Amino acid sequence: MNTSVIERYRDRLPVSPATPVVSLGEGSTPLVSAPALSRQLGVELLLKLESMNPTASFKDRGMTVAVSKALEEGAKAVICASTGNTAASAATYAARAGLEAIILQPAGAVALGKLAQARAVGATVLEIKGSFDEALGAARELAARGTHALVNSLNPYRLEGQKTVAFELVDELGELPDLICLPYGGGGNTRALGLGLEELASGVPRIYAAQAAERAPTVASAIRIADPVHRDEAERVIARSEGSVVTVSDDEILEAWRALAREEGIFCEPSSAAGIAALRHVPDIAGRRVVCIVTGHGLKDPQVVEHDTEPPIQVDPDADAIASAAAQAE
Ligand code: AN7
Image 1: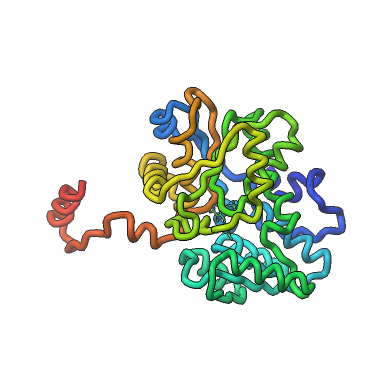
Image 2: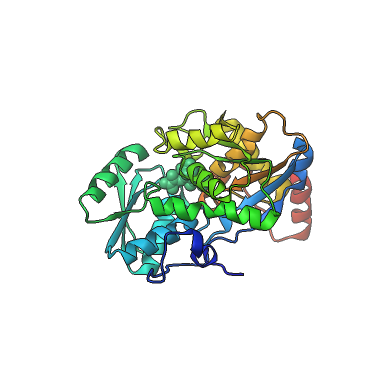
């Protein structure tokens, strides 16, 4: 199997033989069953582990195309505003391409793992004294001056690469599922899914996009976006699919996050569990085949584990002490 999104779907992407392909083997992510949650919900639930991409989030699928095109078009630097995953992906693909990366992130609001990724690969990380939405406004303004290529999902190449997740689902299942659920931050992923489904022209599953009840202060830091830049297009895709936007509370997101980890062994970041939280609100799902897109890996956000699980128990290196501590913990 070819593990570069561009090589695998070249005929459906805006690339030519002259495009320098900047790839780290993105896409071809696992589609795994979720037997415990399937039983609980009365559905056939499959998890598309976009968390298994090179930088551990779904962003790499679009970033490989955006950075390849930036290189082809002669850019020297890329810029993005980000709640963390776009930054990690942009910084990584820029490093691979030999481009400079400027990352704008809301101060104090980015999960530890994502910031570590961007710093490790040598990006210039600027903390904006403001929200994600304000950082994005500034990035757009700077990009308009022509000095930096904007690699937020406003970049059309990002959406083109991102749409390939729909192709992969059909390649793996032989057909589309009945429902797809996913988190809804800025809406780029939902919009790109709509693009992919439109090109497949083999029907449209009901799409359920999960947004945090309180967008700005949610525990799911990846979707801490007050004003979704793709709202109109994303919500058009959802409406056409006969699905809906589902609003979920932080408690529901964390409950779904724990269930994925403890019942299925899938450790994702909180925002990635929002789709499962949404599913609990969706009508007429009995017996349906559902794909939930797990957008980012749990290692991105170790602070949530710190807050939401029991700490390790201190014990002497003694068999009896260990047996007794283990028995108490069970
Ligand atoms: C794990 O990185 O917006 O609805 O700047 O990291 O396409 O915005 C991340 C978003 C879901 C929401 N899950 O997707 C960023 C950023 C994870 C994410 C979303 C994000 P969109």
